[in-house]
Image (cartoon, rainbow, N blue to C red):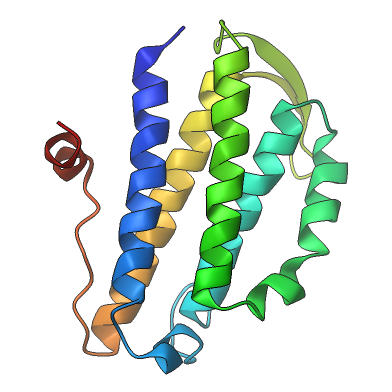
Length: 168
């Protein structure tokens, strides 16, 4: 089993929580304040990250991609209405699903057939999927950092190198 991808997944969880902790320190109205960015609010950005994580774990557990996407996207409006603390619980729950999946699979390099409705069918390993969710969230945590700065608030560092020292 690839220990590196497991470490990277742990980093992903740590970085999400680190950012959530920072968001708890800024005024509440900033969470839903509209601004010019990839998504119009921090809330919508975080919900997107959660929905992507939630969709991929269902795919890894055997759901068809189009079905997992539809099921998770149907929750978008309800999730966007949640408070930061309520969404934090959802992040914790999806992380537990991933940890359960990872601990139950000795070979994360095993491949599955992925029928992506946006592109085509291909074989994809669990490791590739994990790296996809990690890099996807990293990109959007950067969006949120930029949104915080746009609103004149400092963000927080979520660099992988900082994770090394925070978890020694």
